[in-house]
Length: 231
Image (cartoon, rainbow, N blue to C red; front, side, top):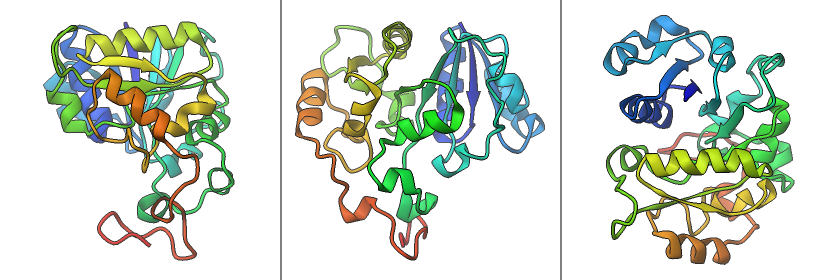
């Protein structure tokens, strides 16, 4: 596939490395411009491009940037991009650590539903509940004991099928959690978040999730602080 990745941080950089190694043609972009991605491009064979070009002529786009920055993407970013292009959202809401207060999410909107609204495109929520290092190193062939399972949510069955296949290629079992409104079950603070469960473990963790955010995952009057010192 031709895959555009917007964001070259921990998850974006890891997906660039893994997906190029699997033979996919990757176009990677960040907010600072393609010249800042030259080392990653040389290392992986990916093509560094401006953000707008990451969504052109591709089969799938991954948006993997700090959640607070999603609203700053060009409003017409996906104008002219065919509806069949799958958009994956890996973003997490860290109000006290990084993102500050986002009113819609604080009022109960699932993180990825908010992202969808900002992008103006349907999204599939995936790759948000695993550490980047584990995404890089812990993939296993299908059927292998202890294979980590990754949940994903979305409203388009065909788009989910594309992402499930990609998850399998990367060495993980995909677990379809339902529509995007169920994506809160895999967000930070829930039992499935960063636990490296297998399929049965993920399904149990999803069933145990609570939609009510604990104080650790809600903004305060002083938010944001830092990951070292949340506010």
